[in-house]
Amino acid sequence: MAIVIIIAVLVIAWLIYSKLFRDPANVRAAYKGKTPEQKEVIRYFLVDGCMRKKMSDAEYDAFIKKNVPSLKQRGMDKIGLDEDQLKEIEPVHFEGFKFDKDSYFKKCDDGVWRSSKYEVAWLFFSDTQVYLYKKTMSFDEKKDRERTEEYFYKDITNFSTVSESKEIERGGEKFQVDTTEFKLVVPGDNFSCAMDQNEYTEGAIQGMKAKLREKKQA
Image (cartoon, rainbow, N blue to C red; front, side, top):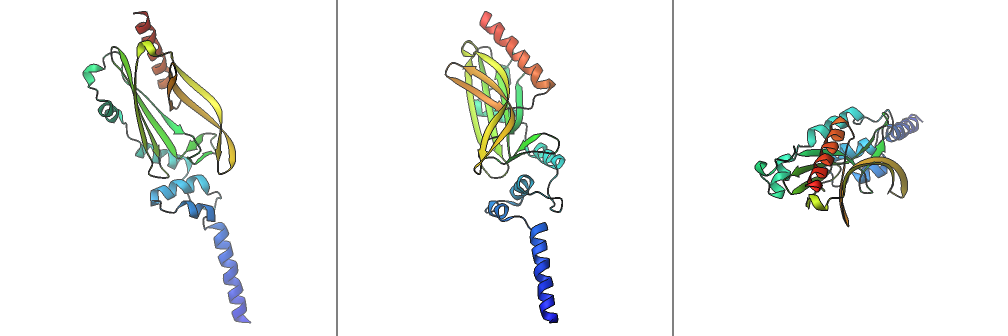
């Protein structure tokens, strides 16, 4: 009888452990082939419950700050630019969380949408052209992407900021995600990147618009 009781207690303890502390099966499946750091990012987005230890929002923000480099020099090197070529206005950069069907994302307790993807873009201004560099970083997997473009001022239609609620599907479920993007528009094409809207980005875009008007009137 005592053995039966012990076994029953162990079974109950295991069930409690599995429910309260062990990550759900779908999360454990997502860990496959991931580094410890990538697993922590996945846990941040997929694991709920006060009994399950994971990164806080503040800790995730600190993680992003630590792991996102400036990339200004990287952008200049990729495009093949020299500082002496960029005398029109100061280089401008935008950065922010990127939301798509291949990223993990959630609306956090502070009302901010966060994602496992992050974008940094740099814009450089010569006498005749705007050069662009963008890197999209994935922190739940090793899958970073880079893009470079260059446009003549005469071809650029507008610089703009677009804030919208975008429908994104992930895992068969649809979400309305609040996003903000910077867009450079040319006929038949556009360059967009994620951005946090703040005093710096507002001032930078106004400066870019003023330079564009100046170039088109020249």
